[in-house]
Image (cartoon, rainbow, N blue to C red):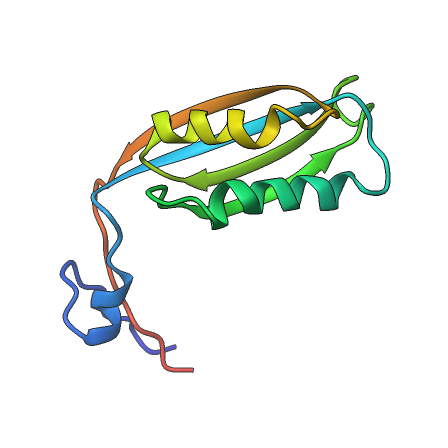
Length: 127
């Protein structure tokens, strides 16, 4: 196998496009649900799209999404999402606006984690 050259500073156009933010804020949240039925996944996705796809000023990117049915790790039915954002106060307002009339939701639990990039390296592989 050919030796891979690892560099500390992005040099090529593509490496520069990969440079990640110095600081990153991830938000993970659960939507506690009263019940799980066949339409829950579609309902949640529609509401999340309303919150984020149509929101102005909230820069975000989905990392994951899923539904834990009751019994998998507890008795609650949870819709969970992880994404990146930095505007937490706007996020709270959007959650209230778009989930306050969702009859299947009990509450929303959030976690906000701030990360600082320690280092970043680049390499290319010929395949």
